[in-house]
Image (cartoon, rainbow, N blue to C red; front, side, top):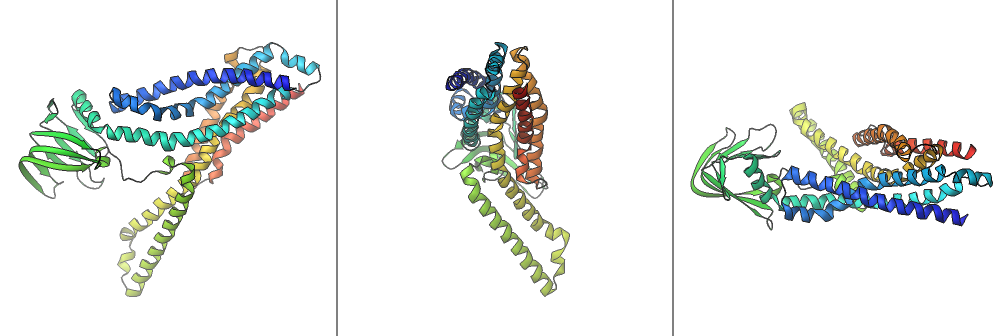
Length: 395
């Protein structure tokens, strides 16, 4: 029995390692190319991005590599009639499948850790590199398209003379319900100060329009510092739940719960004070809307924090669920081609598992479903895989 187990495990490890390296390299190039094109990165920022992109590439490659290796190994074993030979000796086919399930369980635990590193360290590192390369990115965009824009800012220029922007126009968007601020100048120059997290605009003969609430003219040179995060279009400095590591989510949930309780207590105190003093106009929908909006936003963040661990664990254990389907499917299709077995598993996964995962995650974040609903896709695959296993064992 041990000989059969070692035979399957070693064969699976060889195929899995080769497939993982190949798929990771492909995903790595795709992700690097995507960031380079979207952000206009040069060679040096791309080289700095590489370590942070590797976990993200492996995050996508591991489940697919596990499924591909499983269908390959078991398809070849079944095609060589080794399953039939084992059954003829009175040995259950599960002897060949159990080692793979154990290996897939170990890989799933590793995938959970990999997902955690990819979203907390990998994405954060990518954002930091892009933020630090902002000056290069902005000048690159302005040279090619004569414009640069994000949610907080839009810059257009007539042309560039070295690092000088000729006849630039800056549009700043303070908020959605306010008119943008406009700054025009004869010349301008950008310089990023990474130590102070700011961008310094050096303007020559600048006209300023504060969205219809005032205007001014600054002759000669005028230096205007702008937050690096605002210049890059980031809203606030707080990290989203999806960028926190698993060990940070627990304290963040406690902090968010305390914040919700504090907001509700403040609302109750304000309402009581307004009723006692007869200032009932303070309870009007227009004035009260911001308070209720703050509570709703905090509750949504709490739901995201509750959902995030389940999402990462279910994503990691998709490897085990893929193997539960891939092994018996490849054995049953022993006369089919290898790619036929792979796509017979992959297409239902693509059409059923991933839509279920995305839908359940969205509903769980909104509070419609409990956070545990994220596991529904894994449960469907597991039930299907167990049904296929029973048919392989019986027939």
